[in-house]
Length: 69
Image (cartoon, rainbow, N blue to C red; front, top):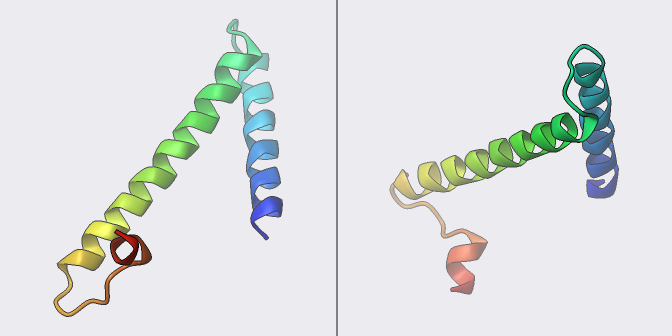
């Protein structure tokens, strides 16, 4: 499942980059890497927000990361 998701995300970033580069004078690589990096930042922010919210709940079970440390 995760392999298929990563392929779909890469495919989407490539096509969005191609579309943006077609209408812009900037190179394709700039758009593809910028879109992929923006997706990475969104995923990182979502994970961080979820961890902060789960810690703020009273009596919440520890996450796997907290147990491993």
